[in-house]
Image 1 (cartoon, rainbow, N blue to C red):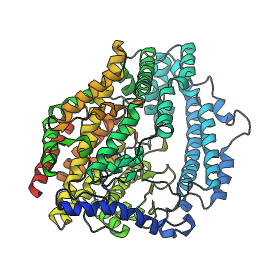
Image 2: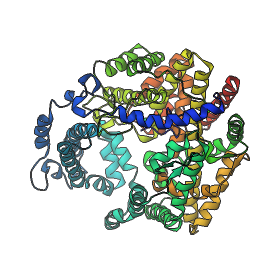
Image 3: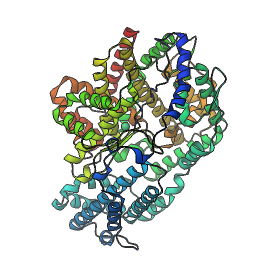
Image 4: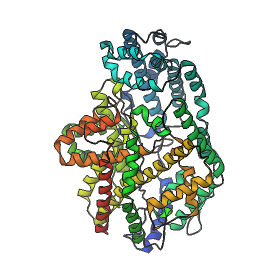
Length: 638
Ligand SMILES: [Zn+2]
């Protein structure tokens, strides 16, 4: 669940600290790294010692006991599989029936989640394992059947009239479920007559076509010409490798990767524009059918996020764009470039510290870094990372790449890592540990129904812990270069997560406004507006290449529904809470309370309880102030 646009690999530029000659050495390290990887081939899963594996046995002793549980959860062989749920059909005006239905429903859902957690962890250990593939397939099918068989529940609540619904939620038998019912009830003013609802439900799959078509094009059909480095060597180019090449110190490689990836998308410009149009039109269809004033309101309504949160974010970031201009100009100067292009923005300005940390050191650093959150928090993280074995630490053959935190109400908050010892890996561990502690505290302090925190707040705990680790590492950093690297990392985090995602949010909003006004989206219109936004955000120093015009076409998030702004608000909230917690014991307690609240309130209320009001501009402004101070700090080091 990492979203930072910046990922500092070991292949780093010496642009600032190192002389030009060592830049050549860095390029060599790109190649030697490849060879090294071949030499240190990851081991097969069965060769991984148990101390380096996550403790899945705590969930199920073995696949056989998992299967036993699966059979128990499967219900009747035929439909309905779970007659204990369907027997309440037509009775949801009766509080006692509702309470019993929720009890059975939640008990079953909880079991299915436990089964699913085990199956996906085992599969991720070895994506080629046929038994795990088949087990995962079985539980996925069962969950699909469960959701089909229970799909009548929410619509039936929505058919109740005002008086019936009011009586229902005020009944004492339903006190534990009141907030849950309230959330369902919020949709009632936007619910149509049953026949119309049926039509809407029937349209669901077809409305999703643009999203799926983009996925097919982006993940399977699109190919790109290779990227070519300064020595003429070719490198296979894909969406995955693109990000790596953009961080290469070899400018020719970066430029070539930038040009060729965008030219690949450019050759489908009309198709991609129609796909975005299709996606936006499907949002407009739903918004109008459900009587919302705009696509934005329709998207934010279910989570009770006010449109002011979205609009304030854009306004606050816009007001501070000169800071980003200043950073681009500083970067140009530090990189000693005659002109700076988009493909020059991702190269780390400072080489990463040579001293890589082994996992034990990383674990100790992460545990030490959370000391400000108190001994209780620190002890349970320490126990989790060591005795309880939450983490699957190293790469092995066919293990899932990347990193995540995952689990369920009845499991420990597992962490998947592919630890190689870079600072980025250490920060990833801190990030995932942040998620895991949030999950643990929510699960321990909330009943099952309110244990899952909403997406809007999901990245707060993880980025908060990254800040803790950065603070800790900065205090320990031995050299100026290490200090500068950490500061640059923080700057890049804010640039990629707050500035860039707000630019996206603004673009996304404009696309929907055009659709609402009946304006047809064309490649020319999108290109012009996208370039305009980039010029405004990055400022006069950025040289805009023609390839940038089409960048919107390759951003998968434009095929979601008003999603990206949450990256920016999430990091802003985390930074604001971090500042507060570092300066005030009371704020710290409130933050722990927030972590323990799961999904028991609407996201804005959860954050407000912790001390930040996202409807106001304060936290985004504070993040901008912080960005400014980091630029000042970077200048000081260099
Ligand atoms: Zn995350």
